[in-house]
Length: 176
Image (cartoon, rainbow, N blue to C red):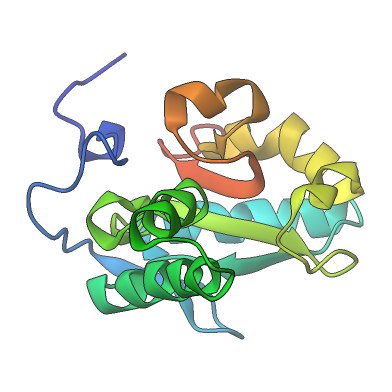
């Protein structure tokens, strides 16, 4: 059933920035890297990664929760790359936001956003969608409460360039 007050259903983007900085209850989703997600999402990711491993797919959590400073730095780095290519401040800001949203518009602050790669394809680009890991995630991620956050067919809706590595956790894994 749908609960409109469930904080996991908050849409964050350039049209709907955070009203206030979130403070999710965090847990390690990947102990080796120390990357954290919201506690329920972290547990779901661990179960999902274990299930993928049983199927011979080694998932890699490349990014999870980011505080406001980390999100701001990522946006500013992306914007700086466009400035160095000769773009105006306005052009650079717009182009950067298509790839790396400003801090208040970036759902990595919720603790539910996860960038997931694989050991055989550790690069954050659209080529990830040709991997067995992407195929596995497409088939099974929803069973663990994860959805592809920025699908190709929804770029005009999300305002973000297609990212086959970006997932958002929406619900607990309900099967035993």
